[in-house]
Length: 488
Image (cartoon, rainbow, N blue to C red; front, top):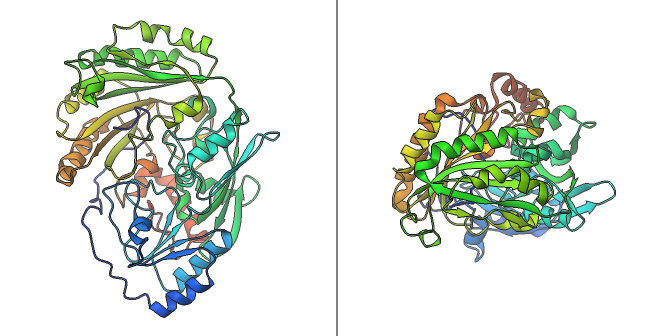
């Protein structure tokens, strides 16, 4: 399963079926061969068509549940190519999907029959150490930003799987293990360059198009193709302290209480996550524990190791644990620990919510559902500490909704056998339905695993109406609709 440290968010309304799994032939006869050739001949990037040797690789995305067949995959090498691709898509009346890292859980970075604008040729991160800023291209991965920033002793708060795309993570909000100290990724975003639906290249920041800047910080996929991001960075030169303590599932209630107390009393530098999950792979655990449900707390302390030792003493004294992997390590090591478990091609689903609190009844429900996980799948309930730097940003400052919550909670499950598609999704849905009464408003849009959710449930009525106004101003024809869509 994934590192016990990956985010999510939201209440649990009725859902629409995930449009995945069933292979479909390409039906794009509307794309005239000569028209496509004429476009490709004048295009500065690469063009991949059905039947090309690279087509299956070009259409693949991270979530193995998603199997779609676009009519065209284009790989721009610069902003001018993005403009040309959008112009062609509009002339041919094609559905447009935009792919940064390809990690969209419901597969919204691809489509059937339309055009995929794949930004993977537009990579890289440039650091200005004096100004403490980074500029990332639209197709950059988290690893590029992390590596470049840490090379000069700086850091930007981002997610926890290094092959995730910077664009998708940022435009949805950007949760990560540094969030209590440095905020969400969007709280460190200074500017973004977009190609809009009418082919304009615009910049959104606090000073330029500030209304658009408000909207892209949480609902950004609705407004254009992001080709560049500028971030503020923070000093982080010493090792961080990171790892997990594991206990038998019978101690879940006590451990959850200790988790909550430690998060409340600890400094901003301390992030914690509480997990109820299976002990997998079983061979990594003692006999009698492997393969069974366990309770765990993961931590990341970005202060000096001596302070981390002090702040984590009570948690580590709770025992004896089944395992304790907490130790100082380079930040980049922690950022890569989930990469293999979260490799491309596995089937994945999740539901999530923001919580008002962490009552005993909620913890008991996660334990009950952990015992009912489908055999052959690896799943977990994760609860993340929230607040601090996140809550210091006013709720109405960005489109992102959920800053006033006490915790974030997600039910995540990963598997490989297509026969487990129904049971695995059903497990996550049932678990989150049972805890929905403990949820507060807002959802983390990057965690919404259905192709078409009710955007009002994500943003709330007031923000949704403001986003509708922005959509009408910037994309009145809803060209960018392969997302959790704000209808103009």
